[in-house]
Image (tube, rainbow over all chains, first blue to last red; front, side):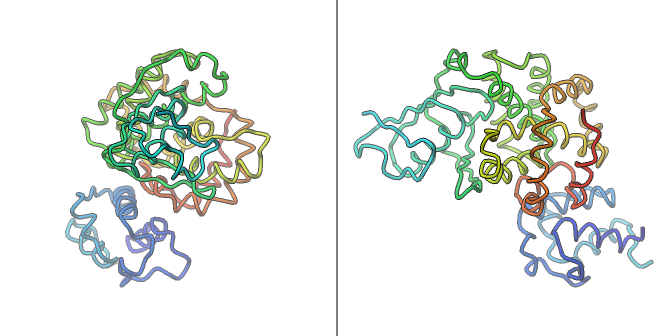
Length: 81
Length: 277
């Protein structure tokens, strides 16, 4: 699975999004379930899908799907293909 | 000054004499948590807990779990722990065996979910690993050591978190009591029933289970034996239709969302298809 598809699946599963709710520009303040528990769950999901272990500061600093892409891209995970 | 809390639990804002200085609670986790909530509202009131059954470890925890309209309200208050705990293990001698075994399941669920929690530190994991080792060596049934293990497990999980077992137990308890009153559902029994299925999914869901068990030298075969001994197939099958109804709420539960492995929507189907005895 392409990394963009994997990311979509993780975000949908973590935040219990309905079909069509995922967007690349989705922000934390638009998602009710993106609370402190969601932050933990997102960190777990990122580790499972991409093998990267977020620090607590990194996980709580993520404010949008774009931030996830930026964080993982900086670790060498490619979202361009 | 004597005080009697209402049972079954209800809004207990006025059960105490106005000048009561001590509240002594003898009971299980539900009653102890109710007493902790009463004490929160009464500055200066001292609380003594005498647990009559093991499992919840409520006497050792800053967590308060209350039932509100069939749902669980959970909060943490660092000053919620009782001022004193009296050990009186003989109180559990007359408790039905089913309740005692379920209490062992609640204790094991706290220890395992706290150990596996993504929020656990290595030091906490080592402490909880020791609780798990001791639990594996104990028979399920009356043994005063379960009181100690329950207190250690609950105090430990309060520092990290629990997971899907508790998410299921918190969400299903109310609906199951309403829909299947003849089955006498309660929190500990739900923990005992769902511990093995959830741990199987956790193990299959990521390599974390195997890595952490190996890192802390935990005896995997003995753990699975404990979980198998706690598992009640008939209860599991009876609870599944309600789990199906409530699955969306289980996914949204705070405990489920801090599970060691990401709980995916398709886990319900996988749980239903587990090859269990």
